[in-house]
Amino acid sequence: MNVIDKSFYELVNHLGGLSEEQIYNNIKASFDLIPEQTKFSLEDYFNKFKYWGELNLQTGNYDQLIQKAKSFSEHLDDYVWLYKRLKDYRSKKLLFAIMNNWYRYDFISLSTSHEVNYNHYFDLDLINANRDDVFVDLGAYTGDTIIDYIRNYGEAGYKRIYGYEITDSSYKILESNILPYENIMIRKKAASDEKGIMYVNKSVVNDSANTISTEGTDAVETVTIDEDIKEAVSIIKMDIEGAEQKALIGCKNHIINEHPKLLLSVYHNNEDIWKIPRMIENICPGYDFYLRSYGGNIYPTEIVLIAIYNEKSNKQ
Image (cartoon, rainbow, N blue to C red):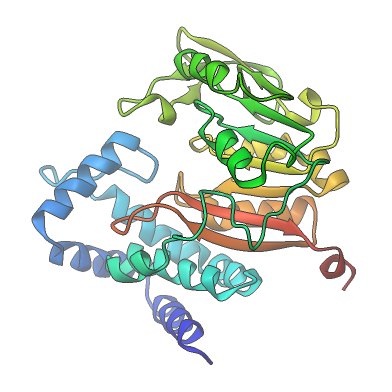
């Protein structure tokens, strides 16, 4: 057993012997030991983004820690399942680092798992592209990922690119940024599991973190990618602030029929890290899974699940 396997299974065996209350108490004890400024930074971060539970030091609201303990207690088998399915030790090391950060506030393991070789999403050891590829960018923002795609694979690296963005101001910049390039189609729509109307919920941080809600004044059409894109697609990227699960359901037919490479953000709540791989497995068995980190070392963000269909794996 190598050092990464040993570290992971020691953590899993340790957690498996504890009650949810004991796990929470240990998380809280670790939290109490980190520097005061780091505590306040985490409090500010969690309360601005509201993905992982609230944290209020003054009132003693430690819901964010409670949610982590609940995740370990109820889904430890799912973390083990994912670990076994990950195809390289960079991914396995990262999953351990994420769990150890949640449990022990281990900043070092997270820091050493950060991706430094390639641009966000585009691990060149895993993701290739050519003239026949159709790339779908869900959460296109101002076009940063589309431009990175072209920078990595060239204008001969795609047949067509689709970009979906919900925010007016970002959409206008996106329109401008893609003008130099051909065969890029952008749509002011939200990807979801059904067609309908939702509303843009403005983030207090910036427009890249805007979400969709059932209430509001700035309406946006929701669509399924299965219905909205009729041609075959080969790469789908998602960074849509917690709406990835519903968008994935809306891509179900493309996934079953065409097996696109999937580049999915899995850090916007306490369950996506294991639940989205489970969903992909249920939709279409045969995908290989990898994890990459493009965020900081204090808390695991910008975590991307790369899922690549393996014809041989599906036949076994």
